[in-house]
Amino acid sequence: MARIADLLGDQPTLSFEFFPPADDVAAKQLAETLDELSGLAPSFVSVTCGVGGDGHDRTRDIVTGICQDRPFPAMAHLTCVGHTKQGVAAPLDDYAASGVRNILALAGDPPDGSAISGDFRYASELVEVVRDHPVNFSIGVAAHPEVHPRSTDRTSDRRHLAAKLNQADFAITQFFFDPVDYTRLCNELADLGCHRPVIPGVMPVIWPKSIRRFANMNGSTVPEALFARLESLSSPGRIAAAADAAAELSQQLLDASAPGIHLYTLNRSDASLAVAKNLPFPK
Image (cartoon, rainbow, N blue to C red; front, side, top):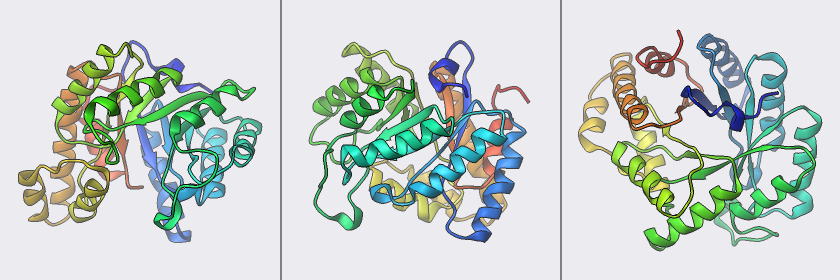
């Protein structure tokens, strides 16, 4: 199975993010979404896990299924807060045995807002464990263009991110809406001697109310004019307008030399299909 680090080169990548479905109806929708987006020949996809690593089994099943059945690799999200090193080693061994070769190493949040426990406090500590595994995993980490919501200041945020990213192979950003935030992030990392690829994450605003809530949690600035316009529309007009806005942002990022575009699908295909249609990826 291809390592994502080896796919990042001269041609921009197109990738999608999914989350584990909660029930059979949602599982059917995810399967249909995968079928529809597979036609775009994505470079890779990723699958999230729940708070505190909850739902690892579902993440594993989806990731391994994609790796076995699809012609592109899947990357598993793995969180470490609240876990022991032994507890993290088990899913890594599981992924290695299943042929999975790509891990997104995340700190994650403790369940129910409880105090941080276990052997880990930071994602950089998990990166070290993944790097030491006998299998040569390709390791991604998260980046926040508008700084991590728990950071005390921009300078220390960028210093910690550069140190973490230099241990990994690439980063994928949290979603954002201003391309200036991305270019500033890359320039700040370069000033610190970090030149690893940073793939921007783009969120089509198909559900403005929910995405506004996500943005508040992640420290992402919401463009009020865009959200107000989308909130005034009904589907499918809202989906079409959201895809147009996401495609415009994606093109601006590609023009700024982004190594690819990572689309947050919310397990739906319609907006992602429309975004990709308007970008210079093979059809």
